[in-house]
Length: 448
Image 1 (cartoon, rainbow, N blue to C red):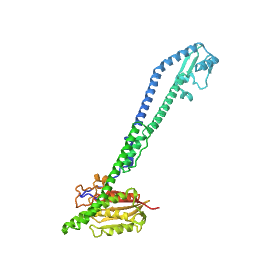
Image 2 (image 1 turned 45 degrees about the vertical axis):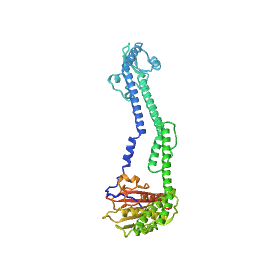
Image 3 (image 1 turned 120 degrees about the vertical axis):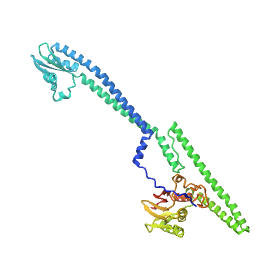
């Protein structure tokens, strides 16, 4: 007894979202990504701030330093130093000296440009690379000229550069460390998100580990408590259904005995039909409970194709009929044959019941896909409303809210089918066809 919508619905199959777009959207909406972006922005801002500070400090003082160096050069030149004296001064003051004049030509460093090249800006070789060094040409008392090349500016510039590089490395290390710390601190949030997804998929044994005692830890503890309460409520509901089903069997038996004493044949027939429906419902409830946790399943290697043919033959005389699309003569699966026949009968009964007057025959097919066996039952009926898909396999759920006699059933057939399939280690899902109708897809593990 399985329920499907009684109103006609034309719904296309949902187009799967692009994985890359979904990942990009997930990154944009991630709290972790936002925190990392804030850290990187702060680090870049700090680097720009420090770099601007050095530029502002170094820029205005550069002119005053150059004036001091020029005055120092004039003072040294006024003493008319010779090569030895200039060498000693260079070692002490960090300056290189060249002299060109009546007393000859000498230099304390081989890479110094000539005075003429400095005057005409014709720097060559290494001198071109270090042209930012401050060169000062100062006349000497004897009519010659001294060229002074100070190393102070280059040393200051190198110190600034090294400091900026060090600062950049420190900021990078801080960002990477913060990235690691944040990733660790936000791990409970990621685990909580995964737990919510698993709970939404029907896993009631979700238990998240406790890593911290902060807000995330308390949230994890509250989630675990909620899962426990949900599990207890569902177990209590199932136990109630089981107890009620057991208790109903005795009064039903007494009513059947008393019914034989009713003289009115028509009334007895109507009451007998009602009692039969009640017995069916009680039987399905007990069957649903017996299948919990895989109990009551005895598997053996069976040819699922022959089982499809056997079950389909029982529906050939019911419009619009059943067509078995055989792609392979034999597909072996480890199943409980009787239980799997129940699943197929439920699905075919459902498809036949909700077929439209102009519907094509219901199609049943089995195929192998990798390590799985897929059984598909496809009808040409009204389809399943998207809003009802999540609840379709819940006990007593019927899309037909009126629960009319026309559609029949108690909303237990799909629940029983789902529990049988899951007891075999498989899954059962529903898909709407592109134009109209729906497909129930049973996936079973292929035997090794």
